[in-house]
Length: 461
Image 1 (cartoon, rainbow, N blue to C red):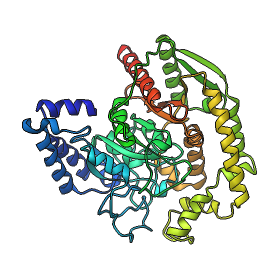
Image 2 (spheres, rainbow, N blue to C red):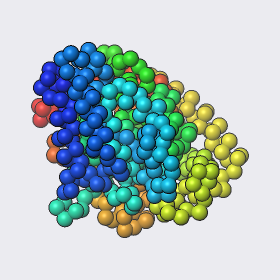
Image 3 (cartoon, rainbow, N blue to C red):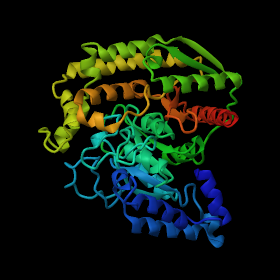
């Protein structure tokens, strides 16, 4: 159920926040479900107390006091501070931290808008993977292709629990972060909508960082409208801003090259159908090379570019100052990547920042003639968990492929959204729409129209 539908039900007295919370808690606490792997902490009594307060606001005498997200349950990724709770960022090495003295600004804005904070969602340790595996708290299984013997497929990361909580009906929406795709990837893998805003729009204070340069804060939910409502609260807008964006006459860039190469057959077929839907709706889809984008991938892969673009010196510095540099207690696969930043020099860091500054201008110029760039959100369907847990080489190969189509958006500080585009019951596939820096409102409005067209096409089929 979407936020709009829940709001209407609450306003009309057809349902109460307490009743909705009890249904969601039942799913989250079901010992046969994914709740124990989806949440690292869940305070049922605090949730019920917040729901009762929302009930009172929705009561006839208090209805005018209902706020933008009154009674809507939203889980919080474990790297955000929540007052009175320990922020562990999916790790065990931060368990001894003192509880947070105050909510992170993003959490505070949700709470002030009436949202019910629904647990701390599991995540990849320190957000260091697009796969979604966590050896400390367990890996929540993808909603697609679960097996009765406990097997299943990866949820996508790093906001893994955020996606499974919504997809399994344990909460209405989730607060995640996206540094290289960590909102969009799990959204695509679990048939959800995931929105990555331009980073400046939502404060990252009070969150454990992965990259100060590239971190952004965004929602995962059931629809574009849900994400727009949450984004409005997170960014400080008074209401969702989505001006009409009819598809007829809109221009999309379909970039030839890396983003459309090496796709799983299911991904290619679903995204091609989605492109046909856009064309049938009157949009212009221009298939053409995007030279700056291909330059990014070349720089990312080539020495010395791989050295200073693929290794995060800022991440190493944060862990050295706040945790330590011995790697004890870390997921070895996470520590291996953090340690890559240990020997990055000041000169190499400066060169990377300079290269990116110039590249951003080239990339934004390449997109200036288009309303959005379109590509698959992820090149593959969710792979099985077990082989990636067992084999380092398989894990890192899968991680690189899963992140490939999303990571570049963060480097140019664009905005992007992932929309489900697969047929009902088929393997989950996301279509990614990418807009230029600060083009968030226009992108959300356009995404709403694309979502409507895709849903209509599914109904016809």
